[in-house]
Length: 159
Image (cartoon, rainbow, N blue to C red; front, side, top):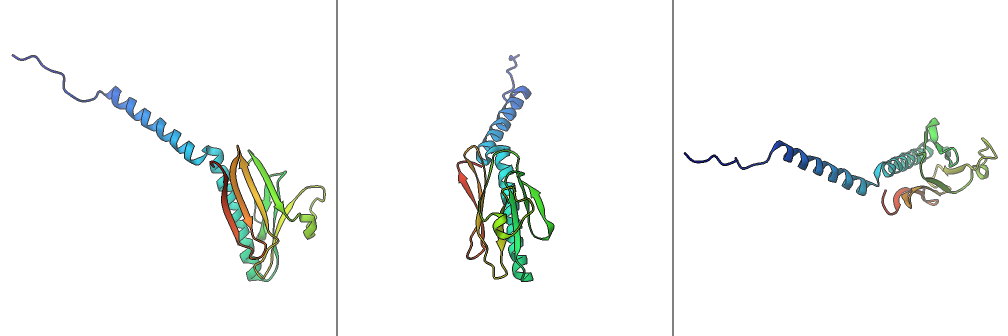
């Protein structure tokens, strides 16, 4: 009688170890490409603000009435047309460059440094930029003053 040789293949333990290694590598790759959870939050908030600015511009054109989008970098909030509002991420930096709300006659709280973008019925705007940034990377929401076009673009390295 011949001696019985081990059956070629992998043990259950070896297969589980390989699956754990693949899962860990996948998580690391996803974090590296997306900038992690913070990068996802920044991108989501920037996309939401850009969408609300586009909505406000469209409403200004359709209604024939100027529409404002108010940014409060200190409170990390925004308000748009038709009572829409939202929060900006708590981590990182929020910087608004453009017209101040007081310059446009929006006086909720004169002491607060509110920023504003006003969209006009002809499609133009006062212009401005909202930058959401963390760890040297983030997203810009740019509004062109002449055309009122709203663009979203990545800045820095990774989110």
